[in-house]
Image 1 (cartoon, rainbow, N blue to C red):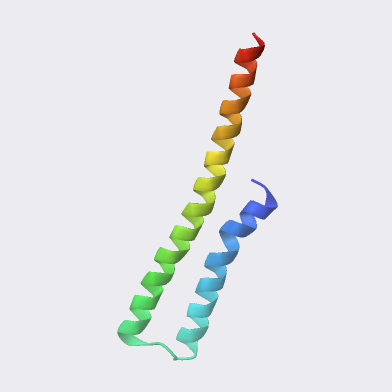
Image 2: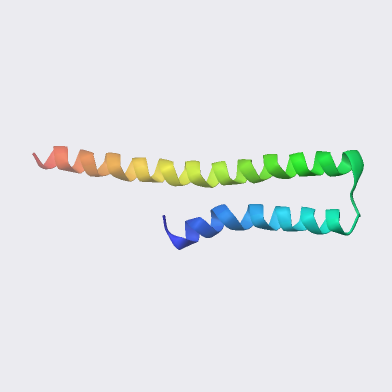
Length: 75
């Protein structure tokens, strides 16, 4: 994986959870709202990571498929 891709995968969840930790430590959120926000944070972070990795995987497969087509056309 490229460094740019790693940043796209790691940075958004890190920011989300840093905000949630700060809000929790500062006692801005507590009780049920804390549980709901943490669950939403996990869901959003997972969706973001899945989107980036799926897009990367699709591009890799597309490049591989195009290379195979070129090899077949050269035969």
